[in-house]
Amino acid sequence: MDAAEEPVAMVARLREEHRNETWNPRWNALEVAGVDLASLETRLEGCTYTWLANDGSLHEKGMATVRFILNQLEKVLPELAGDDNPQVWHRLHRMAQLIVAPNIRPAETSS
Image (cartoon, rainbow, N blue to C red; front, side, top):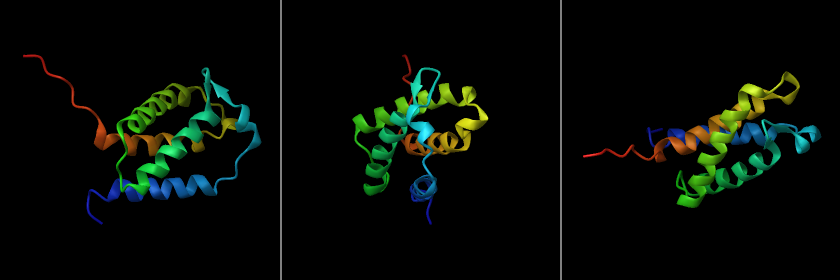
C-alpha cells in the first residue's frame, strides 16, 4: 500500500467499524455543546461515502462540510460523558481528520 492509499484504507476501515456499531437510539436526540450529533453523523457518512467512492477526492462543498463537522466534533469531544459513547464520536473525528488532512489549505503569506 503506498502513502496515497493509506488514508483511504484507514477511512474505509474506520467507516466499516462505525457501520458495524449498534446505533443507540439515545443518539437520535444527543445534543452536546449545542451540536446535534446525529445530524453530524449523517452528513459525515454522506461525505465519507463520496470521498471513498472517488478514491480520496471530494468536491469543495463536501470538503467544507467535512471541515465544519471536524470543527464541531472538536467542540463536542471534551464535553462528552461516558454514557455518550465517546469512542464512537472519536472515531468519526478521526475519519474527518483523515479526509481533511491532504486538503488543508496552506496559510496565506503576506508579501
